[in-house]
Image 1 (tube, helix red, strand yellow):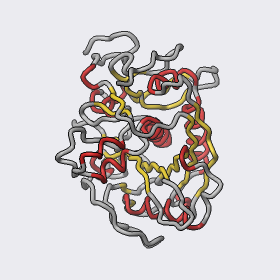
Image 2 (cartoon, helix red, strand yellow):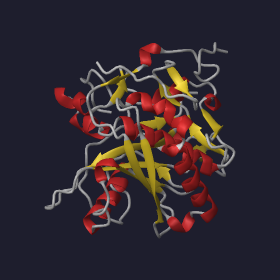
Image 3 (tube, one colour):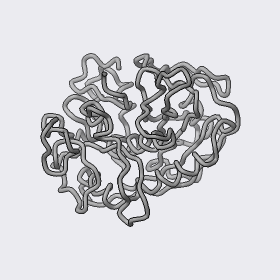
Length: 324
């Protein structure tokens, strides 16, 4: 990601891994502990009490049943006690929360391609219009969900004509036809009223296409479940490493790592290594029961220092990870 001289090279994307291990404690069955990949706190921003809102891009292409299922499952997963018992270890207060602000279907058809330039132009347009003025942007993530058929990439150029925005620092030319599921980042709008940082995530509608090829990371039996798992990954990474985009853009600057929150020595966020390590992906992409017994939700297990690997829901809070 163009940070060749950084000691830690942060990741902010979820990628599928390139094409019988022993169980330990509550680690995902079939995966060995990997203490060398434990997350280390670098001093950057974390968000203990996270708000999020879902925006459905290309709204004419979305099925209402899918948007309703995504909204309900993601809100339930992010506020679930046993799932949060894994993530609480990265917050010294021992308390975290999540609040779903609702969703909005954006009019229009499905774009063929959607880039980082497009998503950053979109959330900047929200800011410019005043639509975010009532939000606490210091603790809010805007989820931009792409419809069936749209290819996501990490190009900083704008590929749509919806809005105009300055070209940003280029990134690797990853796209969702090569295993990219989504990523999270941030923008700093240039407004006279001092609008703060806007945090966002963007994710593809992971599915097997009519020609038999994959777009995104299709694991579950229904694509909407893949969307939930992708954004569960991104929301938890935003919780624990909110300003990773600033670290990436800082490139070779020695201060770049100061932006990072919880990141491994290899530059991985909490959702990354579980995906890289899983063989098959169903070791870490699973439907799990909600604590209140109301049903199940499709999620991706996150990295837990407590078990040195990906961990599913647990009945008791994980012990706090040390902050050196």
